[in-house]
Amino acid sequence: MGRPVVDWAGGHERLVTRTSAGGAPPWAELDTERKVALRARLEAEAERRATLWRCDRVYCDGEPHPAVHDGEPDYPVRHARWNQLPPPDAARWVNDRMGNRAQYTEPWFEWMIMAGRGWGKTRTGAEFVKWRNDHIGAGHRIALVGRTVPDVRDVMIEGESGLLRCYRRSERPHYMPSKRLVGFDNGGRAFCYSSEEPDQLRGPQHHTGWVDELATFYALDQVISNYRLGMRLGNHPRCVITTTPQPHPELRKILTDPKTVVTTGNTYENLANLAPVFLDNVLRKYEGTALADQELMGRYLDESEGALWTRRLIERQRATPDLVAPYVIEMETAVAIDPAGRKKSGKKASAETGIIVGGRLDDEGFVLDDLSGHYSPAQWARIAIGAAIKWGCGYIVAEENNGWDMVSSTLRMVMEDMKRNGEPLPRGIMIRPVSASKGKRTRAEPIATLSERGLWWLAGMFTELEDQLATWTPSDDSPDRLDAMVWVATHLFLRRRGRADVA
Image 1 (tube, rainbow, N blue to C red):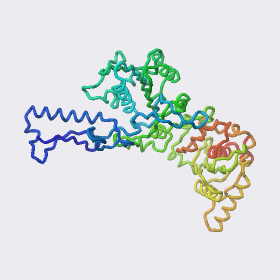
Image 2: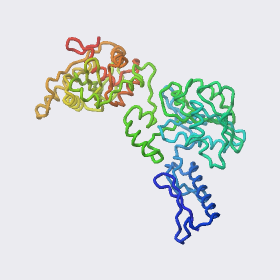
Image 3: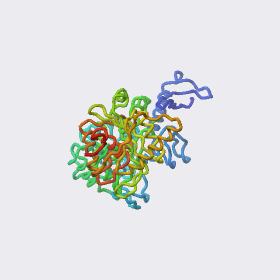
Image 4: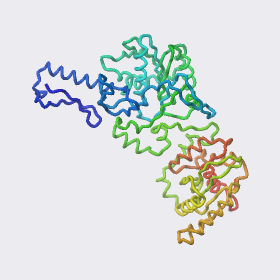
């Protein structure tokens, strides 16, 4: 009889049999007993491949490869990438809440997997539970904590990448939904909890925990404190947290805890295991947006307490560039410059020069472009003049109290050079200062108020600008892009008697 072959063409499991060179009889010519035996072998091989996970190859990328050592299973299908395996108890450098780095040698307590959608967080969490249960055995107590009871059941336990799918059918643990309990053959037990009822975590003790999508929990602080207090069995109780990042003070505390090991990742690392329609309908649609940074790239988009712009406000005030474009010709437009230099506090400012293009139509204003970057004076002057030509701007503005003389003289010199070289110049462009005689908060608050009133929009994605908006507090030196945005908005909305003065 020809040896059965499992063909995994196109990334989808498809079992076929092929005859060997010896000319073994095809399937139709086999007797019933041999068919049953062959089918059993094929199903066993399919199950083996479906449950393959842990590979001891150093920094394995998860792609198929032969066995690492003789006598070990081969890996003909995709399996765990190296960063999907539990981290070792090695000395590590950590940042405390003050930003200071220190070496920490104690065993880790929480493994935070903060990655994008489709990275493989659920499978990684389930395999972590399986791995811990295999090592601890009888008496092992596990906490499965999800957002809701259906989430625990449908995703963490019975889901496509859930706990039950990590085992072959003959070895699968017994799930008892009515008791919210999963029983393992070796005597381990997993108990189900939800953030809807955080008090259920008060009292029970566990060796191991798996917390899924922590950032979306109800009563997040209560859930965290209760499950942590229950992690007190064994020599080294441990918990894996699998979540897509969302800004939250409690999540930030976990990230900065020295007993936490953080693994990050993005959706693109696992594209080979995702449906092609996901690439077409999701990735290409959201690429380049703040939502993609968080949900696909797995980036923790922090926002500071006391920031005038929140991520929610920024996302609400985002306009589609294609819908704004037809109305730009009707707008009053301007370019604002915040040159790299020194702030009033004497601290060195960012090496970037902020260059923001803004426009106003009736009572609404728009950020049209962000051209900020690392430039010499001649470079940023040319970029600002080029932006004025492109967007039909009537003004180039800059802060009066932060190098205004240098800005105006540089712009005029560059314009003279362009004129001598026969380069196109903006017609009727005026260079005006923005008076900034008051504090940073006083300057920025009117513009933040415009956003809150729904009158100041971002016409597209401006990642660096948005990061500055969401993380700047008035007690800090205001960053370049934010300053330039404030200057252009102030010019468009608050100027008086032909000058852009802050009242």
